[in-house]
Image 1 (tube, one colour):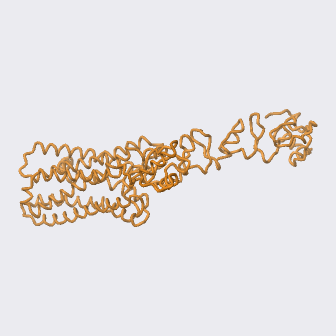
Image 2 (tube, one colour):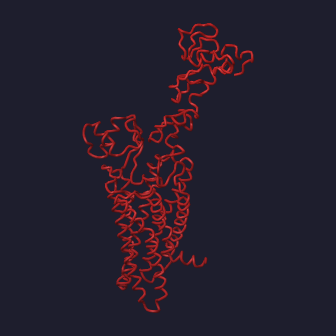
Image 3 (cartoon, one colour):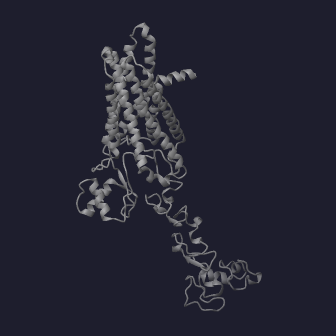
Length: 502
């Protein structure tokens, strides 16, 4: 505001901050305003009946509305000031928005990215409920949330792990697809002299098919990571409760379990070849086909059980349920059961009954999805590292123990095969050395991949918290890396091509 020099020190307040009268030799007007002693305006108007600080201007030039400590002064617009209690409340009262500006309210208010609403109370940030229409209050830049794989912006926050997913996925798809096609060609065109070699090619084909699924999983996760890049937090819950995430989790278990089962079958055949080679030559191919079929069926059952809609809800850990009963969008399973019990005045008979009771009582609130065995992380990994008495810990213990037992069987069997191979006649020494080399690589890679995972899982079951980096490396790299390495270890086709390239 600009005034004439004639208006300075004339006994009349023209500036709302009284600066035109407080820089004068005569401080009477200024002191009266500061002490709130005035009841008569400089123009002679009585304001006794119109108390000060009521956003009214009975005095000319707003003499009664200056220097009020309980008021916030708007810089522009018709409103002179508003009560301080109306500042930083999320409602704009001053035409210039000065009562809600960031510099004034940042410590109390979180400002929504899309400004709808303008801001929300800081206490509502990251409480599990989207108060901003764009959900930005649940995805602040300086987040307090701690996750294993993801960050506020990336589905896989660690760039090394992100790159590893791309590399392992590409290697698993290219390597296993090449081995698969080569094995089919061998089975169709080769006139086998014995059934052992035919069975071996059949096992390699099935192993490559199983490991190919892991490649599909890795590449799909990587693609989704690119799709969500920069805004993952906004899509986190929708993604982890989606059918695609559950399907990818099924692929992980189906791939790893089928691969291990086939490796055990291959180990058994090779063990039989050392112990009773004559009987092995007489084994018909249908036994090989039947054993691999059983491997796929068993692995499929193990993989899909966690996504079945079981009445017990064993694999359900929580429910995506926007509501006004709990201060979160993801309601713990036990809290859902308590809510159903209070509604029906009885304990629900099972999980299906729990959902029916709640859905029937509150039609306005819809269950959007469920978090389960594959929903713990952004990369849809199975929940292998659980603590005793946590949800699904028994199933995780079963999986880890089964895989650890199979690895020990493979390890002991190949050590036995290795020792037997060293005693072969000299004319077979070249083949023996080749076999011993493959066995050494097999034991080494299996040890590196499976032993750390099993050990970490047992440590977690013991109740010890694992560092999220340890978990990420164990589950995110060691678990799928076997699928990229198996074609090199088992397939003579890949080995021969590597040698030619070198």
